[in-house]
Image 1 (cartoon, one colour):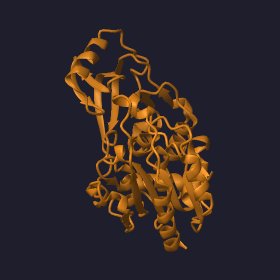
Image 2 (cartoon, helix red, strand yellow; image 1 turned 90 degrees about the horizontal axis):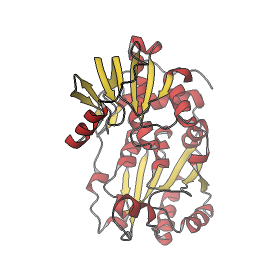
Image 3 (cartoon, helix red, strand yellow; image 1 turned 90 degrees about the vertical axis):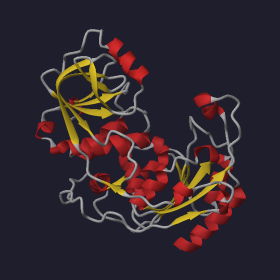
Image 4 (tube, helix red, strand yellow; image 1 turned 120 degrees about the vertical axis):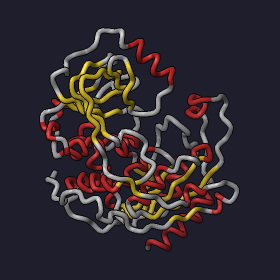
Length: 351
C-alpha cells in the first residue's frame, strides 16, 4: 500500500468527465426519466459541532435537556418519543472527556457506507481534534474488515483502536461532531470523488489501461435474488466476461478490479457501488428488476465518475407477501436474449 499523493481538495476542480446514458428498449413501457437526467454537484461536507449533549445511538437523535436538536436522518415523532424513553436509562459517560465523531452505519449496507459514511469520515480530518478524537459507529454490531480497510484508506491510517461500535444506550457527551454527509446525498459530491481517488491511489498508484470485463455476481443476495444467474454467467463467459463476487474479496482487491475494468455488468445491488473506483470512459450495464426502478443510485455514481451508463429493466413478479420479507423471498429472471443483444452492442462500442 502506498501513501496518497493527491493534491489538497479543490472544490472547483472538474472531477466529472462527460458520460453517455443508454437505456434499452425494455424501458419502452416503463417511465425512466430519473435515469435519463443529468446529475448536479453538491458542495463539500460541513462538520457540525455540539456541546454538552446526549446522543441516542439507536435513533441517532441528539438531545440537549431532553429537547431534540439534531438527527442523522429522517425520524418521526414516534421515533423521538421512543428515544426520550431511552433517555431515562443511565447514560454511558465513557467518552465524556473526548471529542466524538459520528459515523452512522444506519442501513448496514455497503452502498450507504461508501457513499455517505466514508466521505464524512474523510471530511472529519479538517477538524484539529480528529487526530485525538474517537470515531463512533452506531447501528454496527461489529466492525468488519471492509470498514477498517476503507477507514484506513480514507484517513491515511486512522488507528483501529480509535474506532468504536456504539452500545445501544444513550451517550452523555461534552463534544460531538456530525458531518453533513450523513444523509442520503441527492447529488454527486466533488469531495466524495476526491476521497475515492485518494483511496484508489493508495491501492493502484499507477493508472492501468482498463482491460477487464466483469459481471458482479450476487450468489447469496438477500433481496430480489436472480433465479437464472447461472445461465447468465454461462452466457457472459462466452463473451470473455468473468464473474466476480465482491463480497468475498478484500476491499483493496475490489478497488483494483474495478479500476482495471472497462466493462461492468451487474444486477441492481450494492456490489455496483465499486463503480466509484472505475476510470472515466468505462461502461456499466445495470440489470434492473422493475421493483427497483425508482432507485437510480448507481446511475448517479456512474455519471459522477464519468462512466458510461447502460441499463435494461426486467419484470419482477408480485411477491407472495407484502413488505421486506416478500421482497427478499421473490426471485426474478433476466431475459438472456435481451442481454446478449446488448452485450453485442457494447462489445462493438468498446473494442
